[in-house]
Length: 248
Image 1 (cartoon, rainbow, N blue to C red):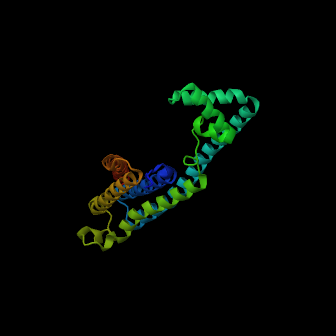
Image 2: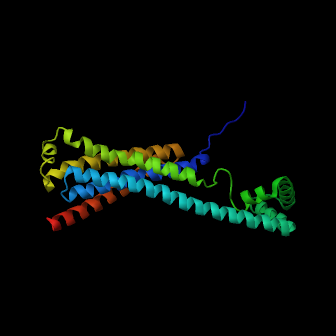
Image 3: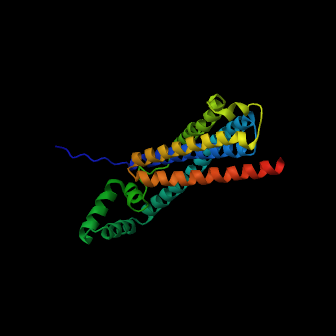
């Protein structure tokens, strides 16, 4: 019987970008909408602000991920070129370098020498990239993949608060219908409470799902996203109330 093992390291690249994008989409758009609502804006202004935040955020996530991951790729390629040059100029030293790495990992000097020589005979650059630089196919940076996934998941996350704003007037709440014509602090509170609750619930589900997918602690992931989500929405609500009161 073949022994099979389930590993999740190959998911690190796209999972990080997906979680970051979805989490940012929910938190930033919900916080923006809550801040504008707390400033006594009407539903149209809240929806326009949220939509603008969605588009700007998705483009920012895509550009930011592409630039940052491309910088990582540039650094990796520069290290590989430097290593390739060192292999061509000082092959003996590079063998000794790999040998020292394997000795530190627990091999006896004689065996470490044999392993270093055989791996370098097979593919010297790959051996040094993996064991000296820590570069593997699993951890290789992919700028376009990171940019696309971040923008897509941000958009999916941002849709939640926008949908809440759009359907809110049709919810069976007394003050909801009043908001179509009147903008007061009392009128916006049901929207803020509804959006905050929905956003926190979505963040908890996202945190739990991402932790489960990556094999991490579900409780810790939920606690982290809940704390930062509450902090972000609370601070923007405070800003909206402060400036709304000052303008009013």
